[in-house]
Amino acid sequence: MRQETRETFQEYVRTRSDALGRVAYLLTGDIHQAEDLVQQTLINVASRWEKLRGDPEPYVRRALYHQHISWWRRHRREAVPVADLPDVAARESDPSLTVAVRDALARLAPGQRAVLVLRYFEDLTEAEAAAALGVSVGTVKSQTRDALARLRTLAPDLLEVSR
Image (tube, rainbow, N blue to C red; front, side, top):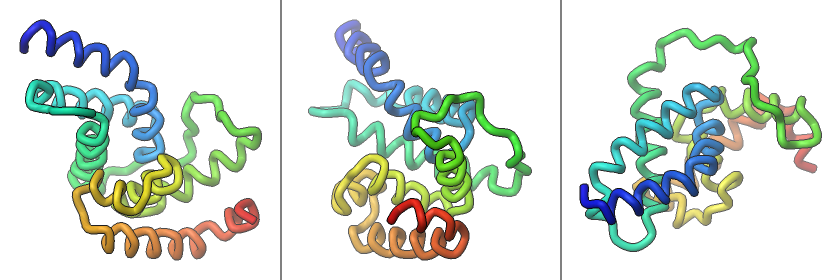
């Protein structure tokens, strides 16, 4: 990697790691897995950094979501402790709401979780979310519909908060 390219990559990592970590935490529900996810994604992106043109953010986000889904497919049968809460302070005023949202997201399939994170936490449009995930807008719409329907069934207590 050329020195100039290395410097631009290092600057990107310095400025965007925290934001990527927050998204990764929403996807994984575990601070340690989120850190690993960001690290692995950045390792994968580093080898392609010279070829990226323009804003690298959409490419990195897409790589993050795809890495998460790959990990989930590979490790979906492993036991995951659910009683342990992360050692991260909640940013919201109501910690129980934070836990409820995290637990509700954890019960969704990775694709559904990724779509909800992109649409409602990252505030992307349907077209932007589709581009980030490499799927059609129709897939984003149906995944969003299915995920919200599943949340209504699995976590009806969140309905009261949204009103």
